[in-house]
Amino acid sequence: MSVLVVGSVALDSVETPFGKADEVVGGSAVYFASSASHFAPVQLVGVVGNDYPVHKLDALRARGVDLAGLEQAEGESFRWRGRYRHDLNAAETLETRLGVFSHFRPKIPAGLRKAPFVFLGNIDPRLQLEVLRQVERPKLVACDTMNFWIESRRADLVELLKHVDVLLLNDGEARQLTEHANLVKAARWILQRGPKHVIIKKGEHGAFMFSGNTVFFAPAYPLEDVFDPTGAGDSFAGGFMGYLARSGRLDEAHFRRAVVHGCTMGSFVVERFSNQRLLEIGSGDIRTRLDEFRRLVAFEEELPA
Amino acid sequence: MSVLVVGSVALDSVETPFGKADEVVGGSAVYFASSASHFAPVQLVGVVGNDYPVHKLDALRARGVDLAGLEQAEGESFRWRGRYRHDLNAAETLETRLGVFSHFRPKIPAGLRKAPFVFLGNIDPRLQLEVLRQVERPKLVACDTMNFWIESRRADLVELLKHVDVLLLNDGEARQLTEHANLVKAARWILQRGPKHVIIKKGEHGAFMFSGNTVFFAPAYPLEDVFDPTGAGDSFAGGFMGYLARSGRLDEAHFRRAVVHGCTMGSFVVERFSNQRLLEIGSGDIRTRLDEFRRLVAFEEELPA
Image (cartoon, rainbow over the protein chains, first blue to last red):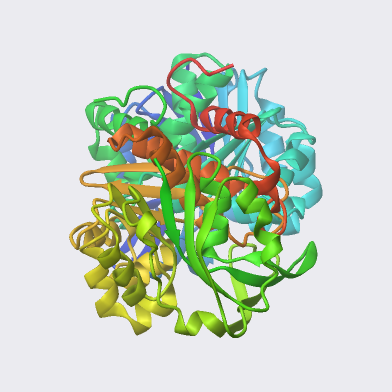
């Protein structure tokens, strides 16, 4: 089954303690698609300006990502410039230029409206709601958000929650949205407002999934060299949704494995700048790291070899 | 098999966002013993002043903790006063009065020198080394430390590492000791200096155990109400050592389960002030929480009911 993603397609300039990258391919939809396309067909809806080096997306097309829904509009592309210091958990935004993204109104092409899996990348909740008005009975809708929308579009975001199955956000955002410092309480607040699952991402400290009365935790893979954390959250979402779309099953066990697939894809993307690592790896690499995850947390049964 | 613990026996005064406790029973050896005694016989070596309300340790004695090695010396008992703000991960020390603890020279009674399991609580590494000179061929030695000793007694601490099997410390301490920001690198640095296992505790973010070429991770249990984090690390150590002493087996699988027992005991102690919660719970409570842990991280096999 296929996954429709609506989100940003950007040019990122990133500085980390280990190097610099200028105007590389970025944006939530790009990271998501690079990750999810390892598991399922992906259709991308977004916008770039007429200055965008669209040939740089050929690698995505080569991975089977359908870019028919990517508009090219008059104006500048969305650009983000950021820096990570030694604490790789926190990006410092140096500059954001929305460009054509500031007038973006997502139009879902007729052929994509029946997409069974829909991921609403981190954009204005009003636009996320517009997407949901255009799609037809998706099997599963997940969305991401960020501090900026929690502050400026709280009412729309709370309205959106009624219409999504899964909310993904980080721990700081969960605390900000719910005004609960405790994550168990924050998760309950969110679950009471619509989503059946909430995934609270804690960067290098892993991720919780709360669902009804159950809670699941998966650690981040302990990497020796984290090169650039940009895109880890969207790559997580891509692994999560991609796995569910491939399996087609939405029970608790599959959701848990989907979280582990999310952690796995997040652990790859941070090993290089941009989406490079996600374009290099194959199913063998993914299987190997999934096995490493299994060994990382195994304690009860006989340890896997 | 029994566990010998050498460490502090203190009077703590603690403020948290949820309340205050004055001059309650505390100290690394007390927390450790309260926890480990759920699994194995414990012998405690430490010192208190002649002002210590020793009857407050009756509850430990009732749990089978052997206090024959607890000296009572002329002078004031060790007192710690601290505060936690909303970020319950970090204690703010308001006052430390070492009292009789500043002249403490641990003397291991002849009858305890053959203890098969030895835990060196967080005291001066020179004293930890003195303890090791007195014990006879223990099966397993674990030790804890803290920022103060890493700064002031680095050479002694590095010497100590040659003689311990397991080092337990928190992530900040691991970074400070090894001068590696990355925990995988920090762990390798430590493993190269003697210990066969290093456990890096991350508070509410769980704990890693690195052993040779393997790594294990266990989350902290997601509690809705953390009341007072004091003693969580020592209670972890108590669950860890207590479980190993009870099982008597020192293979990787048992070490992993020991870490989960550590997390379990750490998750109880923070539910009330002092060691109260550890004195209330029984084996049924522990089993229930161990099952909750299993469900918290299970994703591959069929989920336990």
